[in-house]
Image (cartoon, rainbow, N blue to C red; front, side, top):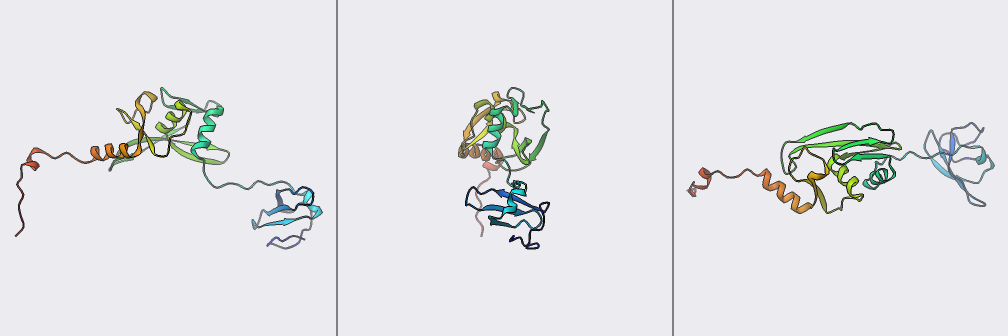
Length: 190
């Protein structure tokens, strides 16, 4: 007997159920209803007739997954020209996003990477740095453009502490005072 919330009884081997985890020996198998998505454990004999099922993971890729794809050759990154290819030599499309205000102002380019049904949008300059150094960007650091923000090649990138990078960005974002503003005397309110 099943514990499926749909109908409660197993009737034939072509049913909508699947096995998430097969039990060995006296251990129960974990079953899954493809309709109501309910899971339950069972030791019934009909389990051998059911297909295996792998639940779809809704979470996206991590930076470690992206680095692994680079190391295994699934992604090829030309670090001098900031171009990304997949394993079948398809060039990935680059999209741009502009930040008009604040310390992150400017245009950043992104690449959407899809592996095994999971995807992640990665900043191109971050991807180039990871490919060049074969390591993850540390949590407390950012990848900074040295000169031109539209140049994502490795020669224009450096690893910078996040607090230093944000302080540099704040200094750029704040407009400098003109000489006329500095010469205005303080006026008290009466």
